[in-house]
Image 1 (cartoon, rainbow, N blue to C red):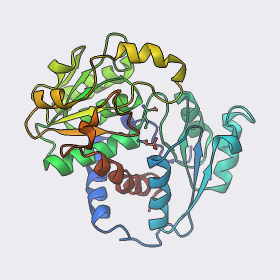
Image 2: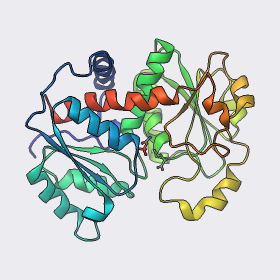
Image 3: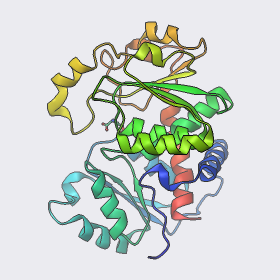
Image 4: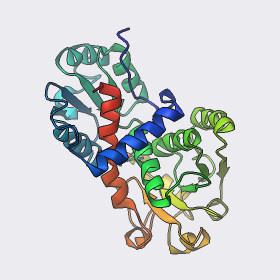
Length: 306
Ligand code: CP
Ligand code: NVA
């Protein structure tokens, strides 16, 4: 063990570390080039098995702002697990670069990358977790609500990677969360149990519903994500049927607190999980997207070092 830090799920960060990241992201948002050139000798590899807009660009631009170099490696170039085993990719790539951001289908692949790599590995989305997204989302909530104390978020939709990480992020920062999903599509048990365990200490309330109308009562934000995540395309018809009634729309928004905001990690499928309410005045989706870059920069400084 060389003492390196990885970010595979948010369980590896303490609450204090998350609050420090929020502080650093806020500072970096005010002064994006505050430490210009700090990464002049650092290279970050992005190993992506799935497409990306926000995660790829925000990490690339964050590295440019820090003065570092980025290598984007698309699925075709590395074919991780197909052309060669994950452990060989990890061992070889970590001889060339100072950090890896990986976007994978199977969570085990990002865990294996971290296990066999000599350099820090950051999870840029797996089928189970999206930690960088959740950190940025808490940052956006803090910006919009000015505090996290007493804030309550409703997540309406699929109990997927985005929700799994959001549950842990809320639990660690004391944000209350109501998750509503159809029967059989709720959050992953291991993340829910862990979030509840952490929440018992932080004071966060974690509630799971099968009814979106109950979930949004008293909420300051309504969050949703696609019903069909990358890699689930063959379940599309079944999922569209199962999620009927779970759309975030004007009617649902009116059932939440008056100043409730609409959140979505994007990409969004208007007409499915969300209506055009996402284009209205209560939507904060583009701030969420922008904040990925500020938070990513804070994450890089924390995980790859200064
Ligand atoms: N929210 C998010 O991770 O977007 P991308 O898939 O475009 O990176
Ligand atoms: N749940 C979505 C998130 C995309 C950022 C997916 O995994 O495709």
